Amino acid sequence: MAEILLIRHGETEWNRREVFRGRADVPLSARGREQARLLGEALKGSEVQAVYSSPLSRARQTARPLAEALGIEVQTDERLVDMSFGRWESRPRAEVEKEDPALYRAWLTEPQEFRAPDGESLADVIARAWPAMGQITARHRGGRAAIVTHRVVCKVLLCAALGAGEAAFWRVRVDTASISILDASDDLWVVTRLNDIHHLHAIREEDGSDF
Image (cartoon, rainbow, N blue to C red; front, side):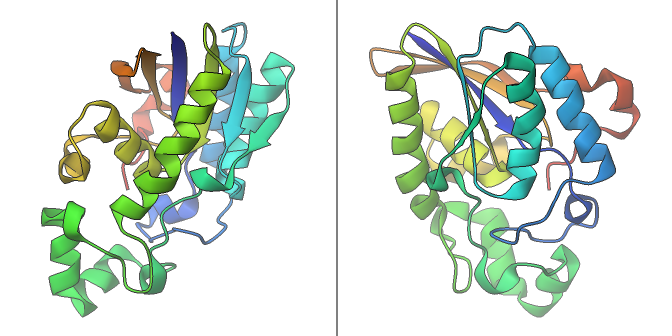
């Protein structure tokens, strides 16, 4: 059995402003850096053997305090990068909804059928992220590993582990700097913790965003 800690990166200013991020390399906000610090403190001594991260800075900045607390290096994996939202990237949600209402509605109601304009679908994301998690799991049998990635990647991995598919995308909430835990044994995935933000107790008055 291997235990995977699936961690969403901390807050960015674009999370607060509800701006689509995707492949745009947006850094953590001041609050996001504090979330990352609290995450590292919470998991110090947790016997996590390795920390894997998306190559984007918001994920790496979240992963770094955790890796430092554990005395290990962050390993980046391109397959853990955020979903490409194509022409929606760097644009506020309200603007996208106004200018492209039909496609935005499809994103909310039929995520399994959606493809971002000049970007990816959820199927594209799971096609690269699921093998990455499988390889990480195989590498750490009998141990624990942390994966620091993005909202979309976290959600599709959790949906796949639960056997729910991309249609269940909006039925899973994943806040900034949250921890979800999955156990893998003999090809059976069990989600043992979902969207845990208890480690953010010091700043809970402004809970993490699911945008």
